[in-house]
Length: 296
Image 1 (cartoon, helix red, strand yellow):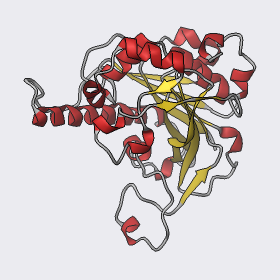
Image 2 (tube, rainbow, N blue to C red):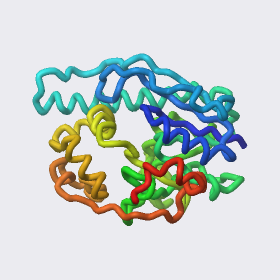
Image 3 (cartoon, one colour):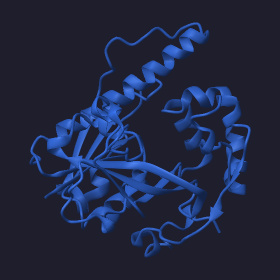
Image 4 (cartoon, rainbow, N blue to C red):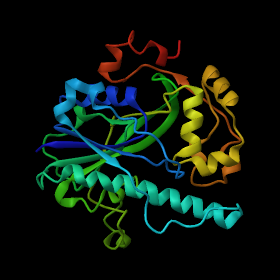
């Protein structure tokens, strides 16, 4: 069984370097898709440079996407309806980018393992069993913000997900499968495309290093990518994020994600914990190299 590690790329050159070095001994091919459009629909430059990763060049399959989805909805002139259209268009762009990963696994065998993640969601493949028996794997990951050692306390993140190629419907399907294993008595699993019984949750399943960036790059990310609709309503500035990073505070409560309005989510501040337990060996062995990205 070969392993294909598949992810979408914005400008996370350092994070991709960490990913490659962490997963190299387990992964056969790294598939990366970069779009020349942000999730907000703004044109962007190509940021991926294969020459930054010469050691891994033969393992990387890079795909450049230079088109927008079809049938985008009108978003000019504001208004609640058009704000809804912006969100729909965002989801269409995300779907297009994820599904473009399919071009990178054409030569994969039906029994090869396909993993999908964002670049900053790194699965812990050390705990993966050699003979994967379940249809779907969900990696339970620890969540970090701003720095490699600033941990969001008591939160479980399911970012990386996997299945054998023979079970793959498409990458959007795999990425957005519900983050739980359903009881075999749940009849709705017979008809659902995102609820499954044959699921294995991988404990100690890795790390989500979210927004390991300076305040300017975080502001650009939030203004242009998946969260940009909610971020626009928050009223937060670059200056705000400079202070959040300095104090190790997240201006967003993940526990309210599915329950509350955008305004409620941004009302609560979460204090991040300094914690170096259970980080990838590669990071711990290269503390000097990444010293600017560890909170002191």
